[in-house]
Length: 74
Image 1 (spheres, rainbow, N blue to C red):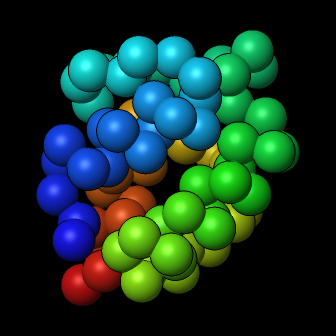
Image 2 (image 1 turned 30 degrees about the horizontal axis):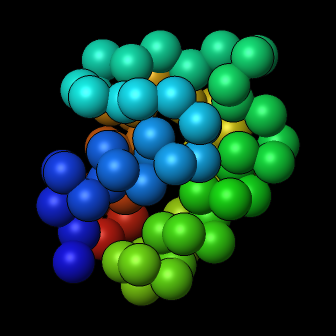
């Protein structure tokens, strides 16, 4: 089920940092190609949502990722 808390938990796991809000910034230290691929797999597995990898890689913060998921989920 896609909800904010589940999403933040998944992002925390992938980024290996505690993500407690949508303002969390993504940078070269925590947002690598491996992180993007991990997100793609987790979002498909947990939420049954397929997002565009290029769009996901361009996200600058967790809010951008959340918005992308919401817009893709329709």
